[in-house]
Amino acid sequence: MSNGDKALELGPLDRTRRGEAVLAAVVSVLFTCLAMAWSYSAKVKCGGPPFNSQGRSRRWPVGDPDAVIPCYSDMMNLWVGRGINDHVFPYIHGGITESGHLVNGAVEYPVLSGMLMWLGAIGAHTDLAFFNHSAIILAPFGIIVTLLLVYLVRWWALLWAATPPLVLYAFHNWELPVVATCVGGIAVVAWGASLDADGKPRLSLRTAAVLAAVLFGIGFSLKLYPGFFVLPLALYVLTRGGGFISRVRAPKDVPLDLDWRGFWTVAGAATATVTLTQAPFMILGWQGWRGSLSFQGKRKADVDTNSIWYWGWRHLTGGVPGKWGTSDGLNSFVGVASPVLIVASFVLAVWLGWRVYSPDKVTLGVYPWIGVCGAMLAGFMVFHKVHSPQYTLWILPFFVLLNIRWQVIVAYLAADLALDLTIFRLFGIINNPSNPPMKWWVVGGVNFGVWVHAALLIYLIFAFVKATPREPLASFGFRLPAAAPEPARR
Image 1 (tube, one colour):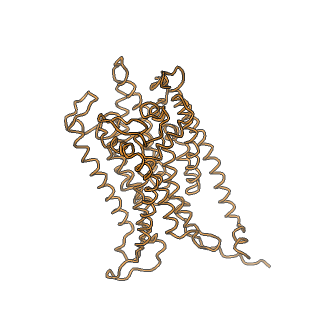
Image 2 (cartoon, rainbow, N blue to C red):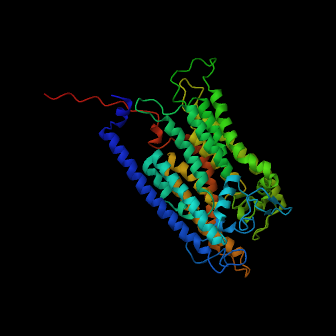
Image 3 (cartoon, rainbow, N blue to C red):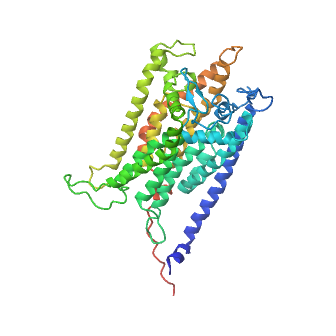
């Protein structure tokens, strides 16, 4: 029998699993489409006639103040003030003013996100049209993420497709493409480790990891954070995937069989991808490209950054309780403490992963690169001076892929829901020219969301590294022994 014939020969168990995968995909995609339709209907209410001379909706940014889900969307917000409404090609002619305002096409996002915004603005003359175009661009990425998660963990994909974050944030900002690159990178490595009809991996570990590194490099040029994942992936290749090493360790004086060439190949692939995507903008529009970095560097820990720095430690360095401003002392402190703690959390995550790999034991383990990626992301989210609510879409796939306690997932999503339903109402109140009184439940909901998230993210730095992958992801690259044939009946 040829290899092709063997690949086509499916037993009852194979057919059952394939049928389950198809059913899980259909159901999950259906929930994804319903969630994104709900998200669109909630966010679109901030736009519509009448429009001013810049195409800004008069009802922006509050819309219906009594709506259950606030209509606020960063996509609609950025229509005015960055040159998007003037259809200026991003970065090339842009820059940043001394007061920190981006102008002439410079936006505060990496270059590929800026390109998506520019594409969404083509043919649009109002913030509502820009929102509609952007939603059309983003929606396919939400479905792609769902299908990849179904491939990796089957029904657990519903944790992505049928929970509130996709409703709240699908069309809040340009998050779906970058999430697709992250999940895609993990899926490529998993598919490469899966076995063909002859029981061999479909791709070598190096090849699969290089493809994943390219996706992470693209993600870096969308929203930066996927670039963090290149190091855990490279360490996974360095240790040859752990499971690919069958030998038993000799005494400690015998060096490890580490794949340093693979390590540097993965790092080089990611670096080359970032260079290819960033270099044209750096060369043709240095000021505009640099302006996006300068903008992030100049951001202060104020109310719209939504982080632990504003809602906690600001009072220790001169913030006045009851006022929405922040002090210079706090921002100087955060400017140093935030990056130091982020780097420290990265080092901790990588070290914890190495301990799980346990090179000091007799038998080598597997470097938990997916868990280390999640841990690094958790550290970045909790210590960065900006913690936008839509970042929940970043971390949600790790809840899907890894065995995390259900109580933690429920608590995180509950805090996220409370945060989203209150923070944008808070913005509406403090920006209202009539100066209405602040509502206690609004401030309470924001603080509840911020601090529950912070506590759980610190916990997840440790929990992600130790968590095992869900099935069938955990079994990629392994094949159960065939069942013994039943004896023939006489």
